[in-house]
Image (cartoon, rainbow over the protein chains, first blue to last red):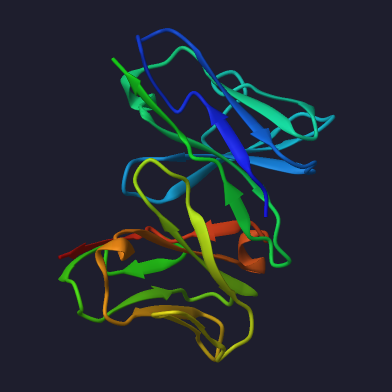
Amino acid sequence: SAVISQKPSRDICQRGTSLTIQCQVDSQVTMMFWYRQQPGQSLTLIATANQGSEATYESGFVIDKFPISRPNLTFSTLTVSNMSPEDSSIYLCSVSGGAAGELFFGEGSRLTVL
Amino acid sequence: TQLLEQSPQFLSIQEGENLTVYCNSSSVFSSLQWYRQEPGEGPVLLVTVVTGGEVKKLKRLTFQFGDARKDSSLHITAAQPGDTGLYLCAGYSMEYGNKLVFGAGTILRVKS
């Protein structure tokens, strides 16, 4: 298993501003995943972050809106840019650690955009 | 269209009751995982099933993988308030590029 720490755990932001979420893992991992989740609902994959290369984004998500950094094998950041109320959500960082590709998640960052 | 259909979407029961959550698909999955998520936390893996017909037990929770590997179920016996949370099934299927696919989730509330 892996221990994943996310910061901030929650934040309230103004429309038009940007917020960077940090994700720290206690072990080296090749891929880190960023998900978005509305409270009580399922997870939507935003992008996969690989160390040393650009992140791979899923359909509906673009780098200009959600730039990702992956400077080393234990750390990644996700920025939510030019925020609007529609970006209010929980953002989760995860890594794969099991033999069958199971995921381990951070505690999530709950973002509210006013 | 959800690639993994979960039902029910919401379940509110009394402590001590039994319940079953279903996860169905028209596609074959190489494995299925079940997660539980409590408010303010990330999902936590409960179990992975990989073999068709497999049954796994985790205390009062019983997980089953369908023979054809297209469906799975989670049965909770004598539910307790601590079982309250969002239950998510997820799996890998070659039909979806071998990316982890999540079901829509089942919100379970167990009242004391």
